View 1 (cartoon, rainbow, N blue to C red):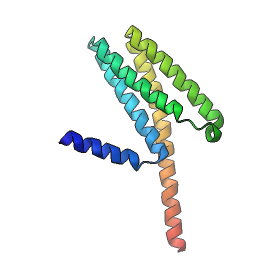
View 2 (cartoon, rainbow, N blue to C red):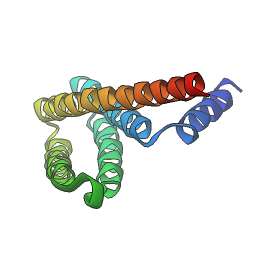
View 3 (cartoon, rainbow, N blue to C red):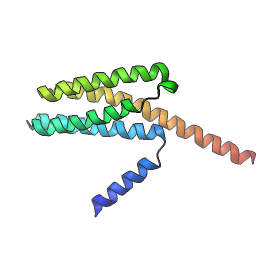
View 4 (tube, one colour):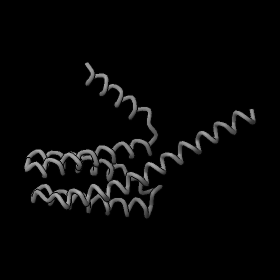
Length: 138
């Protein structure tokens, strides 16, 4: 029952989120999977680690597929290159049970997550300011 409620809450959270917030959630998911993969590698559970890495890679593929080159231009191209690098690095890390590579990729994703979280917060703050200004002028 609790798991059903948790899934329903998560679905509602994603469906009502802004585009920036969805990207933040995806980064959080990928980072979480990489933390699990790192722990599995420390515990010598390579099969579990590989599955967690694969889930993180799936999220990176989704992030890459969602890039808007018409609006993002140069930034979208750079993010694509970063995502491709991470996918390649994680594929090799899973094949070689490379804890250091998994942790390095997790660190890169954490930096990107922080940047997107800040962008999401700025978007939220700007929308709140605009709403407030409209109420004052009405």
